[in-house]
Image (tube, rainbow, N blue to C red; front, side):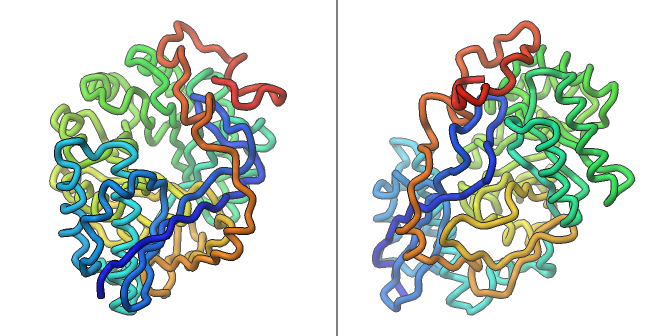
Amino acid sequence: MKVTGYRSLLTTHEWGRLTGDANGVMPGPRTDVHVLILETDDGLEGVGVGAHGDIDRVFDAVVGEDPRAVTALYDRMLNRVFKTGHAGATFGAIGAIDMALWDLKAKYADEPLWRTLGALNRFVPGYASGLDIALDDEELVELYRRYADRGFSAAKLKGGHDVEHDRRRLLAVRDVLARNSDRPALMLDANESWNRTQAVRYLTELERAIDLAWIEEPLRRWDAAGHASVRQHVRTAVATGENLTGLEQYRPLLDADAVDVVQVGNVWGITHFLRVAAVAHSRDLPVSPVSYHANPLAHAAAAIPNHLSFEIQHLHSPIGLDIDQEFTDGGIVLGDEPGLGIRVDETRIRAAAPATPLAGTAGPHVRPDRAGLRLVPDPDRMTPAPAALGTSA
């Protein structure tokens, strides 16, 4: 079996609500989902998810090769861009190809990927994460009731602009999840919107009423000294790493003893996750994957010894994707379909209208001009007014 080519597809996820974080809110309730199909000479196809616009920089490393040699091909892709660099969009392309290669490897063995990777249990514990900063309090409670109905007892909220606002919402979600646990786990994600002094002041105030399980990305992703400083001055655990592209980018954070929960983005691929998890395990640190459509890393999370909890952002699939997994008992139950368990209906995808572009002039993927520069919280600018959706927070 050899890789012969690829197809790129673009589908849509219908959220039924607005999504966003401290940096801004998406202008509409739909987002793009990129799907990669790897073709082989025997007709078997592998599926990967995530943006892969730079695929032509690295695809020659895998074309004509046996896809079962996944880890060797992963390193070949990195080697192809040795001088020009693999970070950012290129690493996303490597991740999408890597997922599709692992999908092929498991399909060739006629077994689900979690079994190929050596997992014993198909259940992956998780936490609810609603990308919820645009919701009012009533909408927030209703959203997390749906998660509570699936057995979830842990949740992560988006926040970081106003401590009273975040405290009220965290307590409301705690009450919702209390049906499943006497002590629901609560997390807050600031999405790199603070500096270190802001972070300590904010968290110190919040901790007077909330026993946070972790604070996520309080500072810029590369600020090892800053994360170490925050970690020394607050009670809650510090979680970060989802936006780091490459194993070497974790080294400063780990060497500075700056992180309690090592996070990995789903879009960076299976091999990257397994390697980060192994390094974290060598330091007795847990790992927690950050969600993306279809939750491909769940198969790998089931197979490692230090998986903590898997972020679950949605309870339904993008248009044209049928995913062999269920959300119950506060986590993901992986199915028995070979590979990642993702079936692609290209006819439905082609018929779907395009979503609002992900990277516009504003929104959660565009850093606001004043991020990290506020002297005091600014609750009036927590979320855009309905007539101005998409303006920076």
